[in-house]
Amino acid sequence: MKTIRYAFWAIVGLCLILVGLANRDMVTVRAMPTQMADLLGVSPDISLPLFVVIFLGVGAGLLIGFLWEWVREHRIRAEARSKSRQVDALRREVDQLRGAAAGAKSDDDVLALLEKAS
Image (cartoon, rainbow, N blue to C red):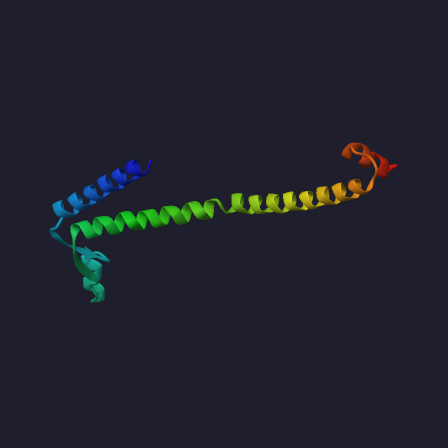
């Protein structure tokens, strides 16, 4: 299984290297349209190799997707915590009842509970 995992990551790495080599040309990334930049007198732009822009775009998309999914699953995580606390409380109650039943002379837990109730 480790061999398959290493082979997969080697193929992914090779693909990333090939994309980087194929997209080495410099591009200018502008933060706002040219007309607006001329109007405001500010032109925030940067020149980067195209593969850096591609990788940053993919990385930003992954981060946004992970954040979106984490926020979406908040309700599920809260419900799981609530159920976990409920299960822990029920386990403690069962342990208490078993301890009380162990003090009774009966070998059967159900019979011990019935004797205690009456």
